[in-house]
Image 1 (spheres, rainbow, N blue to C red):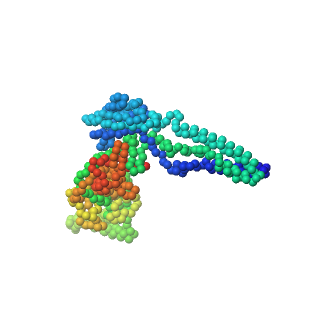
Image 2: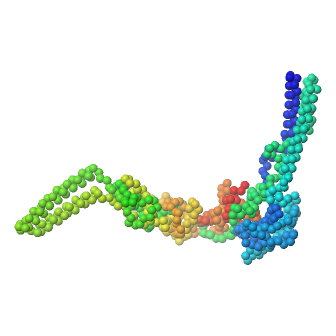
Image 3: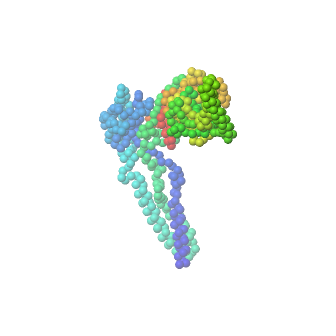
Length: 556
């Protein structure tokens, strides 16, 4: 057993040396392979534009797929007639799912000149292009697939054979190492000889471990070709099929003169002529009317009873009222006896009728004073709706003590709302203005007036809201864009076109080619609730993305 252990140690050293020699062969680094990203393989395609049309043709399998869009807006055109002059003769494209298809058995590796005659509505244009198909591209590769025996399978078989050859070489080296160790052991040079023998063995190719292929750098992953991606220069390649999914729309940039606008902070307030506050004139305890307190959003009419306020009485007040009530009762009793005596004296002629009438009037006054004192203790103040509208706010709870002048209800007419904005410089009275809510909703405003007294060093300005006011709330914050007297020139684009980049710059996307978009850094300022004005960075006549820009900005 002692003589075998040295042999095993020397054999193990030989195996380790042999394996180490095969881990990293010359000119190959596994770490760099892991960093190399896959590159999408484009399908054979051509693009052409003429007049109002822009066309992209892509070979997919044995068909040629045509995408026809409006050049200015990038909107798909699905009701056109397309005739194609192919190397095999003329053919008519067949509409299918928003695109057009023709059979392309002639689409073999090489260059093919095609002529498209497009007719849509009153427009007819002729477009020409060259479809170039690289050598070795098969029909199945064009569809993103491969034959049953794919190149990847061939590489796997090659690696398997290489792995088997390495196993055989390793086994032979192991046996030879044992023999050499047994031969040289007595001389004490067994380990040195085995190491020298392991270095002399020719290492085989390293097998590809699971999930790794050494030929990946030579054969990029085939992602089907229809994959949007950001190019090294920052531009975007977006296939037409992806543009249809993202609903990308464009417009031609046209410069014109526009009045300069200024952004003002604002909030929605009720029209003072169509709103009201319900307050308690005296401090008292709230109690609901028949049917309960009106809920928020409940429609009410002017004069409707909303609540009762019962004023509380202090102990001293109760004592005073009881004392006054006792005095009135005493006086009423005395006057009643006097009236009865006068009635008897009138029958004997000892008293006149005038004396009796005066006593009766005094008795009636005392009784009314007592009844008023009783009503004061029992009656409650009625809170009445001053205007018609809906209950915008309610602070009523049964048993609650309402302080004097406290707002118990607020009534607002939702069809008559205003906007109050604050400005640091006077604005012209006859001006146009719009407002934008936090959700991006646009409101048309009409100037109503400006204050002469500053509020926190700002001038309050009132506007009335025109048009649909459904969904707005009193106190809701808005951004008011008021027109000033200055005029500036620029390109008006929708607000959705202008994006904020990571460094804070304003960016728009220009549609430079059928399937290419490039970001442009621009200088812009607000124009109204829906648009911004590009002052610099975008040339006139360029196609700028007006819908889907945020989706394009997410492409990596």
